[in-house]
Structure formats: structure tokens, C-alpha cells
Image 1: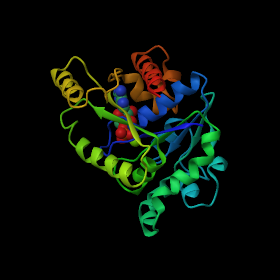
Image 2: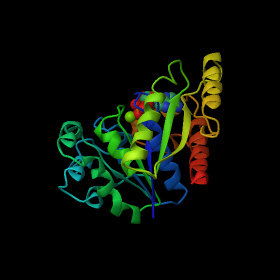
Image 3: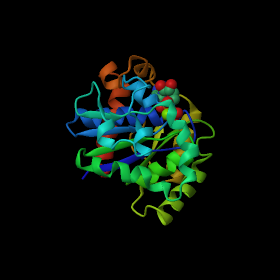
Image 4: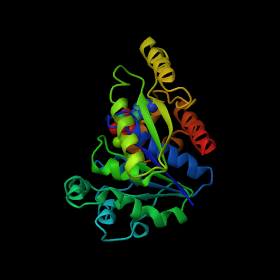
Length: 252
Ligand code: ADP
Ligand code: MG
């Protein structure tokens, strides 16, 4: 039975997609069958893995019940990693899902059969607490929360924790926080070090030991349609995501 991880934070640009793509790639390279589900209409994870964003069928068709999830999976250049792609059409789901009662469990039901096919299933969430993120949190066993070590980093985390609590109480009691992940960290700046200290004080036990550094190779890899471990396996960014993948697996 595979474990489902949602990568969520309603703030944009904090490293959700980068973390989803690179953790998925590292786990797959380590030999675990892995599926990345792109739950964002921007389709950045899809494109970042070299798959065109007009691919059909997509997660949008799966949520609408037109095809089973297994029929929408595509192979990627990473051995052992398959992708359930997004498509800009998915934006419509934000309007369509709330029209139907009980639609919060749509993704959970659609992904259930995939648990037999992969050890790890990662969900890349959009930058909002809208219906797609709620669907992802209802489907997930664990949530990884990327936090950029910048001013305002903690802003919004209270809202996210409140939403997590609501989902846990009303829809998905299994949901647990796997960890907060400090991303795009520039250890040379005092601000980044201060934010790191503050987040670790606020959430002792919950912050991953691994910190993802700001790294040029991580930033450029998606433009080549590949994870950083294929773009430059020996750079500091690849080291960090390998370490993080080990930590995620060890926390279970
Ligand atoms: P989100 O999915 O939360 O909106 P992304 O993962 O798309 O955030 O990251 C936002 C931008 O920052 C992207 O252009 C990405 O390539 C870049 N980026 C993410 N993590 C790093 C990093 N550790 N070092 C350098 N650039 C990064
Ligand atoms: Mg994203």
C-alpha cells in the first residue's frame, strides 16, 4: 500500500513544485515505484518533468470521472517515476467541484487504486486553500509544507494549520504533518538564519533537518524538463533533495 503525500502551502513560489518533482525523482531513483500527481492548473510539475501541458487525458479528466487514474499515467525520463499530468483546463475544477456536494473526496476515490501501484504518491498542490488543495489534503496521509526562509515566511502558516485541523476533524483523521521544509535557504544572510531559528522554535520536532539551499541548478532544471538530480547530480541542490528523500522515507 503506497503512502500519499500532499506538498502544500497556499503561498506561491515557496518551492512546492520543485520539492514535489525532486523528492519524487530521488525516491524513484532509490528504487521505489513512485507517482507524482500534478494538482495545479499551472502544470509546472508536468512541464518540469518534460511532459507537455496539453497532454490528455489529465488529472482534470480523472476528477471529472471520464477516465480512471491509471489510464492517465505517463512515464517520465526518471526510471520508476510516473506522472499523472495537469492541464490548464484544470482551473475549471475550482468552479465545478464546489457545485457538487461531497466532492471533497473525489481525488481520494480516484487515487485509491494507485496505492497498489506505487510505494509513494506525491501530490503537487496549487497556491491556494481552494477545492483542489482540499481534495489533495483529503486524499493524503501526510503533508509536507515547504517554507521559504524569507520575511513573511510564517505568515499564512497559521491559516494552513487551521485548514489542516479542519480537514483532520471533518474529512481525513489520518492526515498528519510529515514536516515543514525550509527551502531556498541562503545561509549567508542573517534574515534566512533568523527565519530558520524562528520556524524551528515555533514547530520543534516538525521541521525537517534537511534544508534546501538556494541553488542555481535547482532553478534551471525545469527549463530542461528534468529534475535537478538528472540536470547536475553532484550539485548542492541534488545532495539536499537526496538527503530530504531519505528523511521523508525514514519518518514514514
Ligand atoms: P511553488 O510551486 O511553491 O509556487 P516553485 O517550486 O515553482 O514554487 O518555485 C518557485 C521558483 O523558485 C521556481 O522558478 C523554481 O525554479 C525556483 N526555485 C525553487 N526552489 C529553488 C531553490 N532551492 N533554489 C533556486 N531556485 C529555486
Ligand atoms: Mg507550484
